[in-house]
Figure 1 (cartoon, one colour):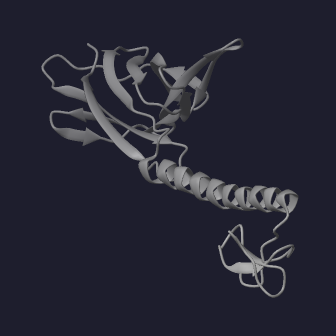
Figure 2 (tube, rainbow, N blue to C red; figure 1 turned 180 degrees about the vertical axis):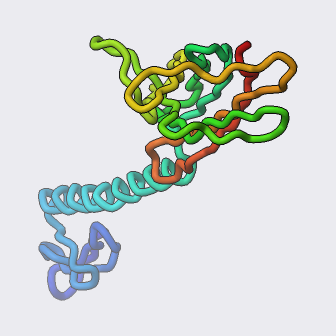
Length: 200
């Protein structure tokens, strides 16, 4: 819009549409440049500023959602499959989307509904198989989708020892306590308890 007038006419600002003198380089109302080149630069700068503001907000929102909903969470199920004199076998399945740790918390023998104290030096460990053979440990790492057979071995001091056996008419069970936890800040330690019959 150009109008004829005393000072050579006026035109509308390209941004705010306020009347300004023809040939003006900057709008007196909104201070925007009337040059096509500078308008492109201003728009690009505005676009970059918007992106620079929105991207951190989106990253923060996704990070917050991952922490709250714990996206990479292990889901480890344990099932005793064999209680023998030499070892106890426990099937472990990680059906979750994140790695997790399985640790052995305790081993107790209950005979005729009475918990017996293990003899001094007797302990049960997780046997980890590697290139050097078996190594006793307190815990083991499980990747997402992994299924393993955990072997529990008994030790008396530094030596291997058999697990207690059931006597003829006696009721005897092993009580096993495990814990499972993930690596996310929200992943809590989850206890798991199970029982199996003592070997004869």
